[in-house]
Length: 158
View 1 (cartoon, rainbow, N blue to C red):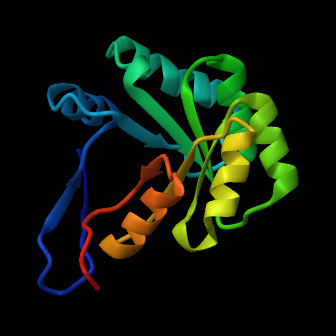
View 2 (view 1 turned 90 degrees about the vertical axis):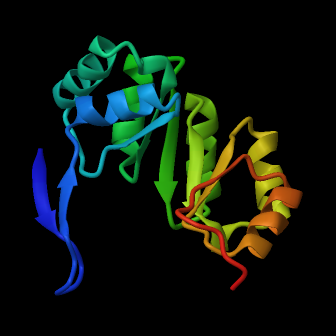
């Protein structure tokens, strides 16, 4: 296990699970694993990551996300049926057309979305996830607009 320090002087020591430990936590809790590829990775690195998840027999319950479109495209080439989301801060129609062609979903900051944009994505066959949303009223609004997923740690009234 890797360890690190939290954000403040009084914070406890934090332990980060390995990929295998994370997958097993998800497996034991019967939860979808969301694996983010933070940096641009080579196809060989991506294949190694996929093999680790395959060994745990949890590939069908794993969603891959990345800010790097090339990572998403490589994942799609290797995994034609897996759940993949491109993470972005920008709602860009030319990028959406690539996502639609490659059957990659959108993972975008919630403030970039509207009903019109969600409907447009759906018209292209793209599911939409928003992040990182903490306000339950905005979450309800986006739910009414047809959002597919919401990433959050905790929804509050504020």
